[in-house]
Image (cartoon, rainbow, N blue to C red):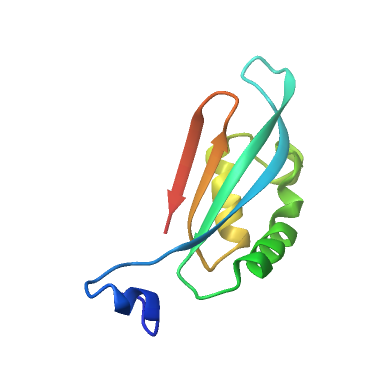
Length: 112
């Protein structure tokens, strides 16, 4: 149960409440064939802290903006797993991140 969280307390049983925001992220990388191509990703980021979600979304947007662009140049990698790790590094209070590639129905999730 989240300490001091009246929402969790009111449920009457142990619950881990997470608050999340969703953002779009535009990236490019070289595929296994060496061809540069882009993706429109949907990022879901979750925290246990009590926060105004609108303010946290704006804060997170600024903290992960450096990831957008060509991944080999921005994070030194090319996979969505590396994107998830870079986001968790940039947002230490996040406990979970989901990186979705909606056009293909793929998702990667990383937790701590």
